[in-house]
Image 1 (tube, rainbow, N blue to C red):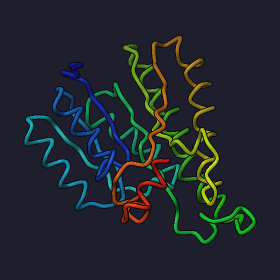
Image 2: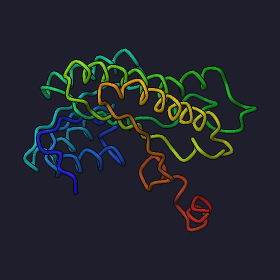
Image 3: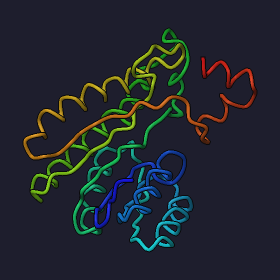
Image 4: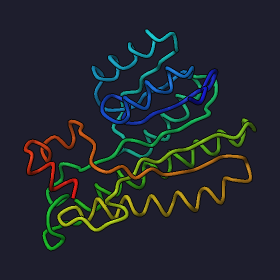
Length: 214
């Protein structure tokens, strides 16, 4: 197992699911962790778990669809941690704006804009802010964008979401080229369906689980 002793990490969407698991994994390997999400209670709970492991934890209650607030949060988290070595852009998903999911023939401009704000714009500019910090620090760093298998394969009724995640894959590759000169690694991971609160509606029955796995 890798050691992250002394490293400083920021995980968005860190209050539950994949983000929580990533944050705790970093802490178990020696990293201090800042967490960002909308739910204070969930963030407080995860921060408590991290502190119980003997690591520092900081929380930021923020709507990550608000790009300006997200960028400010990156800078604030780096200040609290003392530096920033790792950014995990994990926050994202389906917005509540009508038309965010369903056939593309029923999509709306408002849904498209909301989905791209949350899933493309904020991760991009959070990554850019992190790159600037890491470049000034001069020690390199790592940025990890959590996308989705929908970025790689068409998923009916999830067209806007999948296209947003595909955009992040492309932007990840571009930023990796551009930030590499400063020893900053930029990568993306495209998980399949993970059993979390976000996906439980699709995994309630054996038939649903089989359909998602096929």
